[in-house]
Image 1 (spheres, rainbow, N blue to C red):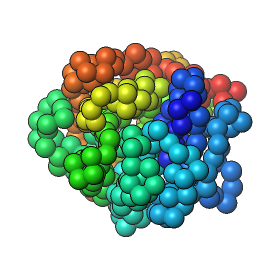
Image 2 (cartoon, rainbow, N blue to C red):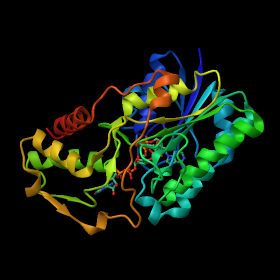
Image 3 (cartoon, protein in one colour):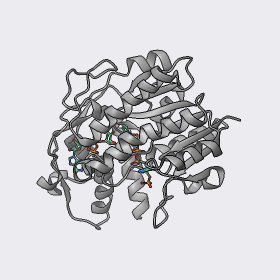
Image 4 (cartoon, rainbow, N blue to C red):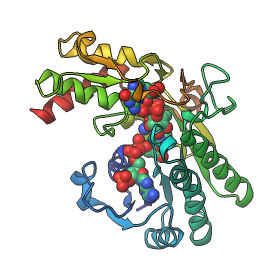
Length: 318
Ligand code: NAP
Ligand code: F7E
């Protein structure tokens, strides 16, 4: 039985990946930081099948201990301060977890079990003020937020450990991926959650920032399979994971309101509070390499994704 350690197991991707690896027959360990109240909403349904280890990406001894306990064949480093907007209000903290945290977990692996295969959760936010469209593995990075800068560090330190120590480290440059388990502050879930509330008479407006930003949005359940595929290859490498389609925030809003039979223009209010100091205007990924080498394809379309999320939020409030 293969053993795996997932950092960020309580998050959106961590929970889908844990489910996926359990189905593949893995023994699944998850690193979980201490919180004052329970936040096991995403993993409650599989909690008796996984083993949680207390630790923090900012605390090297706890990571060393987690590697000792789990003796992993594969580590998936999904833990991060992942909300771009928050990275301006907490830039040092974001750097400590999202950038330096990667070195901490790589060091723990190098010291305890260097033959472990390692996945780093890199991000399309590294492309930022894009230097070419669509973006692919060779597109130069131009991050636009402290989060994006931290992810560039995490990406390069993973490559550096591959080249310095011959460790098996692969990075997935994942474009935005969403699901009913997405955090409520991210725009897709903010929209679907508020649309559900408006439909049920629990809310009367939706306040948003830039409606014209474009993103390449896919379904998180599809994307975790690509993470696993990267670690099953003969050689470590880096891959763009995306749908190859881009849509504006406005299109997302239109689909969600139309699905419940409401006119979005009656409810959406533009609020400067949600505008960013530096915006990423357009992201559009080219997933050719993943298609060719991993045989990976996204399955859920943009429209299906939004409808799935609206349905889930409606069911929750009903
Ligand atoms: P998420 O839902 O925000 O989950 C982040 C996870 O990291 C949570 O489990 C969180 O734990 C954990 N975490 C935060 N600080 C930590 C710390 N100091 N020590 C240990 N764990 C910590 O993010 P996601 O959407 O699942 O994304 C997974 C990874 O992919 C992240 O690295 C993200 O930056 C990256 N990524 C995401 C996307 C996307 O579109 N979703 C795209 C590209 C890359 P708590 O539950 O305790 O907060
Ligand atoms: O914003 C615009 C906002 O916060 C998307 C993370 O998973 O994907 C995610 O980062 C767009 C931006 O995601 C609101 O300005 C308008 O242009 O949902 P988001 P993100 O910043 O793209 C990448 C790939 C990651 O790696 C990150 O971890 O939507 N927008 N109005 C808004 N965004 C939010 N959050 N809230 C608004 O009210």
